[in-house]
Image 1: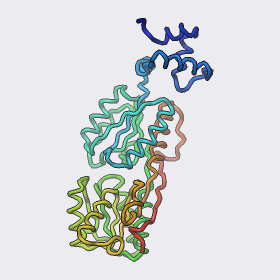
Image 2: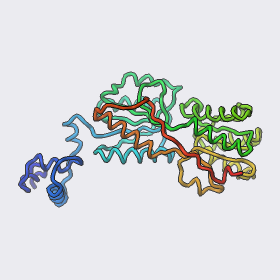
Image 3: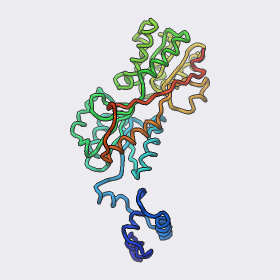
Image 4: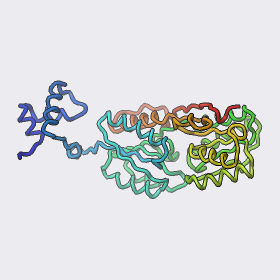
Length: 336
């Protein structure tokens, strides 16, 4: 059987090789009827173009890497969905990598792909307390990087974030105005840029209403549900907060579990508000009040900025940091 390729298709359809080649490109000036004719014939003979080889000839992988701390968090999957939608529209493929909050994995992955395996990177970082000087050796012109959500503040890279400070201030103020005075703040890592911004918003709201900041109510948790159950259980037994403000949704879920175990009623005994992008938040019993971040919008914006860099387009940004607004949604878990 003779080899099937662009040349043989062009010969069979009495077309030029360049015309057939352009038919397999998502963006080209080829006549739609001609494109449909070529694609129909290619499908008939079961031909699939080798985009990878073509991209190598162009010195482009047409691939974008998306680096996230974890894949279990629905928030990050929504961001990936938004970024992928924009990338696919421009003919790019997506490579997804989870660091598991390990700086060594982050460093090894970014270093390994900086040799041309991908054209650019969208990244939510591990944490500022870790040594991320490896980025000083990355050619950001050859492989541009855009940070989203969790960022390195001291690195001159475009950042897509949400208004964490204001969102936390608003959520805490909501609880205060409802009569709460012993509001516990639960965070997974106080050293993350996000954890710090949300803590500032929480503390400033307390200060505004002359409520003393109590360090024992600012609780560092973990990524383990089992550990968090015990941490939150001891918090509720020993310090008796009247409200919980959770910086990530898993801590709100653990709070629900602990309250059920201790026989505490939400919101009668304990009010709860959490950062969460889960659509099932309103299906919990009681429905969870949330600070809802625009996850898909973050992914889309990050991808658009990165693709603009890859095209060499001039960046017209007022700041190196783009801030998107979150929404405070009040439901039964914090009703008064």
